[in-house]
Image 1 (spheres, one colour):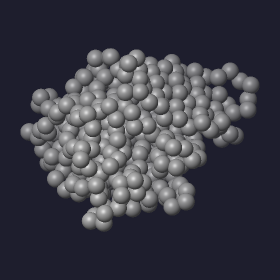
Image 2 (cartoon, one colour):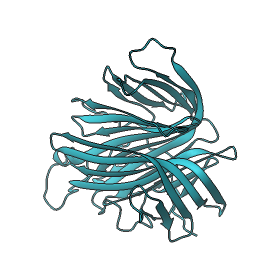
Image 3 (cartoon, rainbow, N blue to C red):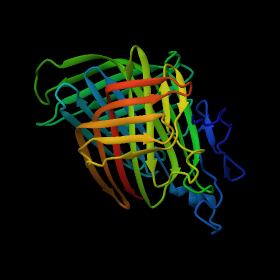
Image 4 (spheres, one colour):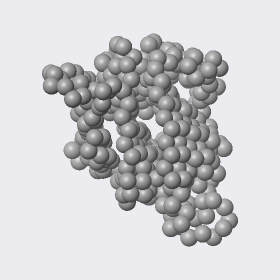
Length: 356
């Protein structure tokens, strides 16, 4: 059965101009990959210039009894964007809210012990913050709608000292050894509430007291000029146990993906590194997706329910993204050989193309 060595995170991810590659049992103090020597070839450019090619992102997926959705931040250093998309499970209704973030020094923070990621837009206030000294991962958003969309607000909290909470991180070649991608994860049960109110109306708001699960991913990487990523992720409860997984494939995957990849299963407080996984949609984007590996650890299908598409152009940045809500069926195996069967398990797949 597939295995990948998990070690303690280093003090610094870059040492003497070289990335420290590996899969780590916890989150490093800083997700900082600045200072890599000659990441784009033999040209002796100073690191303060090559560091300008680093891009950052944060994705926070939440899954409650009534709703599933995601908070997406993209940080291009001097500007970025934030978006919240959520679906009402019973009806499949989609609600999407976007904000462009103007020039700021940093949108997605490097510090992992305490940090905050914020969109300050008056109509799109979104905040994801964490503080390990208080064992707290909290999220707030307050989104104004329009004639077609209600006003939506929410507050979620994840206790990091909960036994079901898991954390992990990786530093990977991207795709060659002189460049790198770093990513950290947190997942666990959430408590909180979501409130909907018709925009401009003086009606009583509808509040949903929420319990559910969260999967947080923060990424920092030396991206190519064109980036293609396909990912599958889910977070929820199976027989009173927390289960989350994150599986992705991109054009910056390491050449030796058996040793270096960012696929994980989090189940009942335990972390399982997963092998390289093939994500395909032989019946089209709106048809059934197939997610399988060659080690018999991952055998899943994904059935779409509703899709959200976006295209964004800001200066030289152009992104095209699809986020699809649906359900997973199949089986996934832990590092101890336990086969976990899932059926109608809510999750998302994402297909992204970026020109940077």
